[in-house]
Image 1 (cartoon, rainbow, N blue to C red):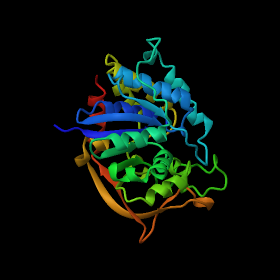
Image 2: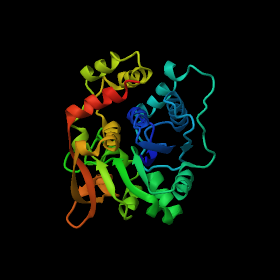
Image 3: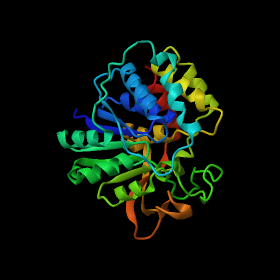
Length: 307
């Protein structure tokens, strides 16, 4: 069976690591590399944790690259410091060395290289802002033809955003963080002809990470992956937490479990609504994950992480 070529671009939040772990369980996927965008993290521990996770899951040959891009609106430090905690979890520190390669070039240059050298088109699995993708497209416009599609966790179409007005005064509450970090780059990607499949807050709001679910993972502790997943989710269970990046990544595992809907949209890049993915007549056409079989989804995670 020909494997689906995937390049991942994540931004170092707790659910980004879990999405990486889920992607690594998909036998039909060949992961060409992981780029870490310095958004919902402090990038050095995020890169370190990513390399350790890949090694734990048998992916010690998969290269990791640190993106050098910067956003406009920083994530709160309380979110970003989780990257330090995950990097120090005991299960990821049983060895003194990390075998997973860290490439020398910047993540945006690595993305260009991987896409140019790939024997066929590549799916970009993006669970953070689109800044690295936009920068790569600006550096090398020819790579657009090598991108099969972008599957992206980002945006809020017909529900409120998650950029809380208490954190970001002057905002109207319509923005989602992965857009808000750098709406100009999101708008740049919107200008491309690449197929975009969004996993917006509209659907992630339907898949909360509940205590019951985390406890089920905990009962699988004899499996190292489940043990690590449970520890990661335990970090965030006191807050309202959803399977944002994990749901987006699960689409690659079974697209038939999702219903997509086409929307015409634009990215608002300034003012009180900057970071809003707005539904507008005549806007850029994208597909959004509209419904998912939730019973399948939770069962799928438990089964995939049982290793």
